[in-house]
Each structure stands twice: as structure tokens, then as C-alpha cells.
Image (tube, rainbow, N blue to C red):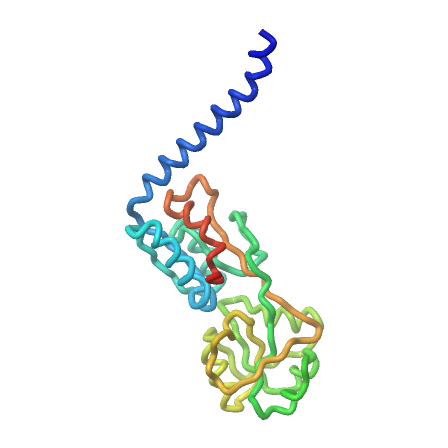
Length: 232
């Protein structure tokens, strides 16, 4: 009848929704154990992942986590090779991994408290390039070096390290100035000051993975907990 033909699309849609719900329930039931391997760098491991993992464990306490703290290039390689399920890294990347932009993290000038530039509200890259510089470099990639190169400014670091906290300690001791991401500068106890840059600069933090269908049920479910990263 005409009434039945009108109801058919509604019934078909309802059937699809019921099947999808059943599939989701089955997937959740499989997340009773397992391990999620995450490759990341220090600021994400310090300020984001504890909030995300804590929220996940409230729902799935039997799932274990392995955190692989590496430089940016190694993070990408670990995800590509399958040694890590997920990777937090800087975008863009060269490979064809699936990527999601999560946050644009401001870069800030880091100075000793008594530095002449500490009186300024914002500091130009040109001014920073005139002082001894301590460079944060992770593997072969440095977003700070790329920034100076973009504006054709000289950068001759006197110290280079991959440890953010070592840089803060060195700046505190008047060994030089630096530029660090805002994320790692949260809750630091060093006697340093931070100032915005002119022109402003940011790093793009993203999440990379192999295709979603290749991930374990636990790793797929963990993607739904990205919103917990700020602890709010």
C-alpha cells in the first residue's frame, strides 16, 4: 500500500541504526583488556596524556598503556612501522598517515628575569637573533630553526638540546635566551619570563595513526578521549 511504501525508508534507516548500535556494543565488549602504544614528545606526555589516560581508565581499567617518548621523526616512523598505535607529532608530515590537527601551540620567547628585553610586552625575532640562543631541536627537525629561516634571520645557537626543561634551567642561569612552546611552559618553577613573539608563531600539534580500521578496538576507542586532554 501507499502507507507501507512511505514507511519503508524509515524502517530501513531504523534497521541501519540498530545494526550500527549492535556493532558498537560488540566493539566495546571487546575492550576488556589490551594495550595502547602511544608515541609522543615530552610536553604532550606531561600535560595532555595523564588527563586522557585517567579518563579512559575510569571506563576501561583493564587496558594498559605504553608511552614512547621520542623526537618528531622517530614518532612518525614508529606509527608507520606499527610499533606505535598512535603518535602525537608536529604537522605537516611527509608520510600518508591519517592526521588530525589538535592544537596550534603558541611559541614564546624565554628570557632570564633581569634580561633587557624582559621589559617588552612582545619581542621580535630580529631582536632575539642578536643574543646567545639556546635551541630546542628534536631529531632532524626544529620548528624554531624553520621559523628564523622563514624570515631570513640568522640563528647561531650556542647550545642545542632536545630537553625543554634543560633549556629553562640554562636560561635561568643567564646562559642565553630561547623560544619554547607555550604548552611546556605551564606550571614551571624557573626564574624566567616569557613574552609573545613578533610576528606571532605557532606549532601545529596533531595526532597520526594508520587507517582507523587497522587499529585495535582499544586504540580506536581512545580516539574518543582526545577531548579530555586539557582536563576540562
